[in-house]
Length: 165
Length: 272
Picture 1 (tube, each protein chain N blue to C red):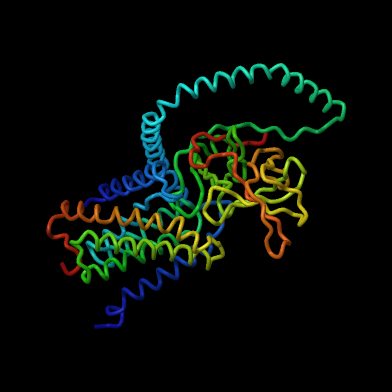
Picture 2: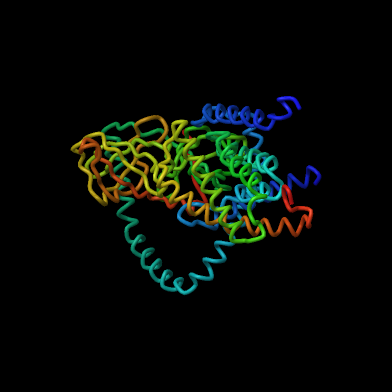
């Protein structure tokens, strides 16, 4: 894809993320589109793409929020890498498997963020944070990743079967 | 195969982790001056966020209109009665205002610094679920600076923590890193209202005295301590009182006057 198409895709993701956060609110968390896209691309294209997507999307989110710049990038890159590494070992054509995997990776991402913030001196309350933010985000991601995965596969064709096919 | 070829992913990953953690450690708190990269990202994303927020608002408005049509008639009747009641109070208010002015003159009371209210529209929320900030469509060109107080007609919203030419980031009262000097209006009991780290839309007021006179339902205002928030801004009301650390610390749960989930317009208080 040309650079402007990537830019348009990124603007669409920001647009979607901002609109959804104004419209949705399960407990007090909005769906994390960046996380869902990172996991999907990790599943489709492997750990390097997953890591790069997570780093770029996470870093741009961090720059907008202005605090703990880099931590959000790490918290997205980790599930991106793991999605890419285990993509070959799971039966991705089963939507329930995809949803379960997405929920587990989203939980890992939330846990990494809260733990990182606590290590750097911002106490966010681990258990309550995971319950109020981590759980809803995991549920949203479990729905979004299978949808994104199916759409991407159809759009990219049979070649986009991910690392190792 | 060289060691670099074999382990390059691990080496690059480790360097990236160290770099990111270092930068995160250096940006734990908001800084007075933001970097050029942050400024550019904020300014580039502002139009996208503005359009996205308006889209979300339009969708929510349409949905609300559909669901609330039935309640509108009863609401109109209630509001008309409320308007009549408030109109009846107008002469009393004018009299009280005149009396207040006379008494101030008698006491030679020095009024608080005047503030100009700069209206701003919320164009986006933090892209992270973990913190409570909003972006507004006014920045340095409208005279907004870091550490200015932000309010709505209902009460205190928070303070400005970052500004670009056209946008400003507001740290909401409920954010874990927020802190405001406050007092209970009934008992004049002082304390500090801080954000709630348990991700609820409430705050916690840490009372300075362990025998603090605070009750459920008390109204909480800003105390004016510190340079950011003027005295007398409505923060909210006490929803619960608890004692912590063997009764040495009195903590009051504060229900903010402002509904942060539905923020659309705010006013930044610019000192004149």
